Image (cartoon, rainbow, N blue to C red; front, side, top):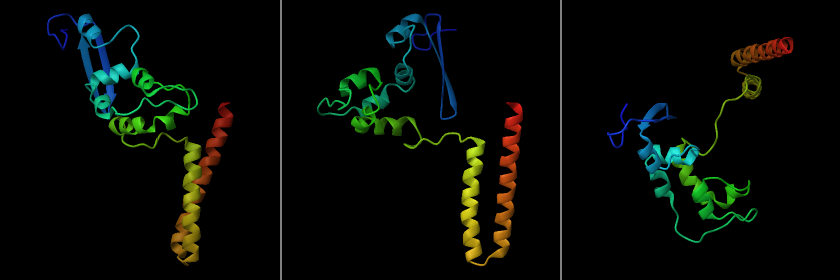
Length: 169
């Protein structure tokens, strides 16, 4: 397979990256990989920079003083070079740098990940109980009965899940 950049040498570096449900593959020769900054130990920032053409960091570069974290004293310039923070307080100190990066690479600024089934059931039960209370208050008894039944189904599912987990252990 030929290098996708120079179209001359054999590709020896093969990268695969999934982003927004789309998988991109890049095949490079050792010379082009070295020119793009890929070495034996890849950093996540270099892969992202390569695949997205370094546009994200160029767009978000801020002018101004080289601020530092009040806790670990890491400087903005250090963060720009390494794409890593020194401590938890860096997130607040470099917030103005992070927000544009997050907007560029993610759908939003709030993490919405997977929720364990047991926790999901607990949340659903709480929401349904609030709706049930409102339905009873409004004397909508048909809706209240439907909500009561839905709550019971979720509670049985939770109990059964706990039993299965206990038997497995």
